[in-house]
Image (cartoon, rainbow, N blue to C red; front, side):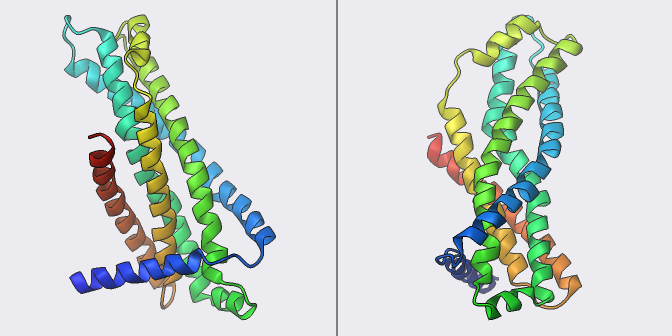
Length: 248
């Protein structure tokens, strides 16, 4: 078990070395980068928006019910919702969802290219397939995932506000002031730091599994599943590590 883990970890770092090799044709990499932005970034906006609004709404409902004390100001409910969304729900939960959506897409796409020998064709043409196929995906995730998380934070707070208003759980004026009361800007920096790490994990781990597929279509599906499990485990592990390091 330990041997398999260390072997896989070593092959992962060797794969990264191949990915970050100097690109042969910068213009082609640029074209591929913008395609990945559309495929991996813009296609996720609707899903992130839907999840974030209801995530904020549910968090407000649960917090308001659990803190339903007449001596507890509604501003404290807003603070709790704000901290929950910014610190944990937006960066971690949305990244886990993106790992399932974006990561499985990357793994299955690269796996299909591997089993259909398209990567071998690129190598014959003098192109490093690892760098050409994976590097644009990494940069696309590193650029667009933080944008999605900021978008998720904003929509989560909006969803929480309207849930409290429509259900009559809070005084909306007092609740709104709580969003800005005792705000700590470093929490946003902390969340975006986690997001960059999670984006790198999503792009590289899914690419690693897809790139190293051996066999046929069945193995492509297995690789996609393994990549999602590994990404989820890695995100949760690094979430703990970064929280311990940055919020001490």
